Image (spheres, rainbow, N blue to C red):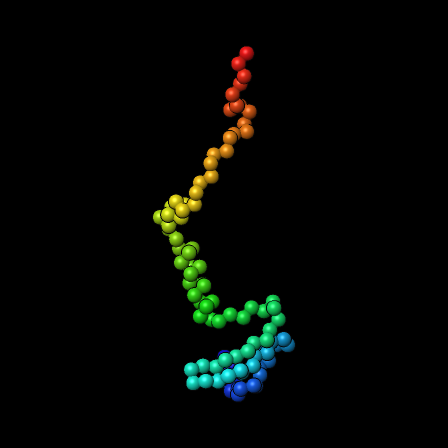
Length: 92
């Protein structure tokens, strides 16, 4: 890990197209501005960790969870069969 000291207004350049600027320094934290191309994802680590944990919990759902979810989704009415062998034949 690279550790740098920066003051308000000073910048850090990552690669050719990402610039991190120190916006404000307070006793309870540092405010950073990040200028990056749209295709570069920038996430707060704690949010990414929470989403990852929620996804792990969702995958770990058991059969009772699946059954409970099925009860919440209405089942569509049965469609008439288009199989000619099951159609009623006319009386002759």
